[in-house]
Image (tube, rainbow, N blue to C red; front, side, top):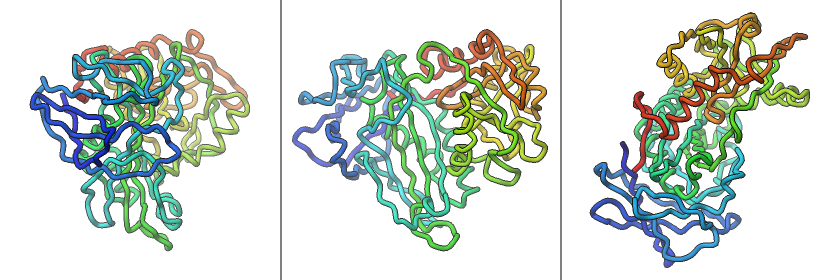
Length: 422
């Protein structure tokens, strides 16, 4: 299990909250929660190296004054005798959209150098040159992961080192330096702990974590940017499915393609997502939930949905398109394959045809936001096929329950995937 990161060098403030750490009761100070998002200015908060405590270590969050920006809802804190006041949000009606929080993390480096000296800042707008590489040439990557709160107040991260590794692999393709895996994970921990009051109560949702890596330096000619920024912000989000799994209806796109061989479809670069908006918008205008893309060469093999990997189920066999450079190696995808094997399913990573899709017993998609999204119907040319019990098949439900129970700390982590912040 992981201990909380320690923050130091924070600005003094007469209304400061105190964060008390560990048996030694060493005190450091955090700026108070924000009450006016319009007047935000990003003041830097240097991040001290993470301190390690025993499994018995606890930290408590105390408020020395009442705040209009917290409600009366309290949850367990990692300190067993202290309740944490949460942000003023209707947690029961929390949607899956962006809400500004208190802090973000930022770290910079120049081309040819390495990242160091990251810091927490007040959440706010960032300044970029109009000639920044990210704005002119799309030199950027992003990641997505979640933090969950357990009933005992501890906070869980799901496989953050996998996101760090994927970011580093994408950075090679996009000619960018990247944080080390350790830097990435420690930055995620720091950002989550600094925004702890925004983590929904158990069962109400999660804290969505969005790391960004971008060419922030000014560049006019086509070339790698001279400077890079690694940034993390967070937002509380509700459960994607409020009342159990709900099926989606997909249409197979036969003309436009998400990725091509030799391109960037296999990395999480920002341009991959803007490229799907036209087909996705057209599909939604016709009443579909999203688009399922085919390979650009043969136009008969499944690739992925706009932002999700796809799986087909036939009997006891679960198949998904093999990772071959045009498909993003999803972390939820990878996890579902392992969970499925442990539950006795046969899994295959292979070329999956449209015929396989139309003949399947079940179809589902996987991604960070949805975890698993069952597919109720597929429309291909003039044919429409429906699946399962109102689209929610037994396998989809079984795998969804298994993985979300693990992510939320409701099941034993036999895979070693959970990072627990104490």
